[in-house]
Length: 58
Image 1: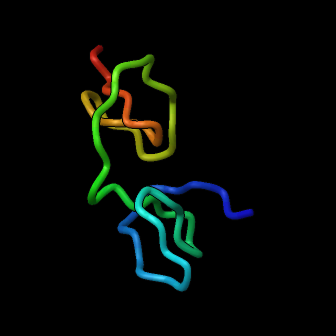
Image 2: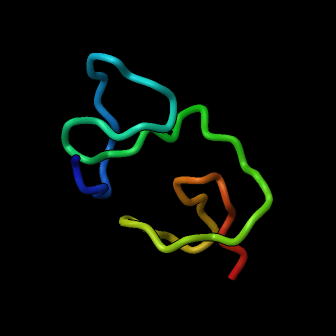
C-alpha cells in the first residue's frame, strides 16, 4: 500500500473520492467536513481537514 504524502492528487484507475493516488497524494476535491477529532497527517496545515474529514481547530 502507498504511504500518504502531501501533493496534488492525480487521476488513476479505480479512482474513488478521498483515496490516495499511486504517488500517495490524497484526493480532497469532494471531501466533506464531519465532526470528530483531527488526526495528524502528511502535509498538515493549521485549520485543514484530515483524511477522515475532521477539521483542525487549533
